[in-house]
Each structure stands twice: as C-alpha cells, then as structure tokens.
Image (cartoon, rainbow, N blue to C red; front, side, top):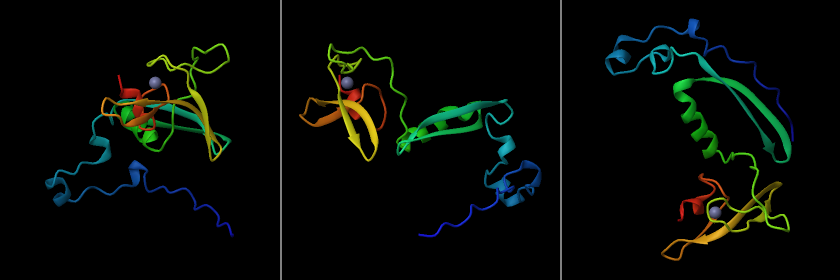
Length: 143
Ligand SMILES: [Zn+2]
C-alpha cells in the first residue's frame, strides 16, 4: 500500500479570491457566502475531541453561529457521539440509562466501546438506546 502526500491546502475558499457571481446565478437565487444568514455574525470557535478507532483526535475550527446546529447534526450523522456523562450506576458499576432507568451493558465493535440497552417499541420492534438521543440511539425516543 503506497501513501500519497496530502495535497497542499486549497486557497479557493478565501473570500477575497472569489470571482463575483454571474448575473444569471443571482437571478436564480444563488447568493455569495458572505450574504448567507449568519455570515455577518462572529464565528463560534469549535473544538471536537474524540476517539477514532482508538486514536485520540482533536479538530479545531470555526463556524458561523447560525450554522452551529447544522454542524452538530452533520457530526451526529457521521456517527460521532457525545462523551460519556456522569452516569448514575448500579452497585456493580453498570451505567443506568437516565431516560428508562435500566442498567446498560458495555458493547464493543471495531475498537469502539459504548453502553446501551435494548428496548421494545409498542409494536414489538427491538431498538437500542445509548442513554442519550441521536441517530445511533433510536431506542431513546421510546417512552
Ligand atoms: Zn434508555
């Protein structure tokens, strides 16, 4: 397996180097990034830390405040999840789901570890709940 060097950082996103939008693009409703909602607000500093395949990774950046929720949703869609909370635990140390009040079991797959429990929907479908809402925790929404 050969490794190719990373491409040099692209400067194509620098605002000053952007050509003006053609008139037909404006007529179609396309607006420059500087005119998007939230573009005039000061950006929010974002630091995302986590384990990726067991490696500790930290990514820093900034995002317009109005787009923070969009970024969080995009991270969740990539399978990134919140860090473990200060869970209530059973006597033998198992974290307790704060929503369903049941002990969760540790799961492990491809170097990732998490806690979850199974729960059935009213129609009998079995889902997993990780003790917080998210796309990887569909059982959380089961009452
Ligand atoms: Zn739960």
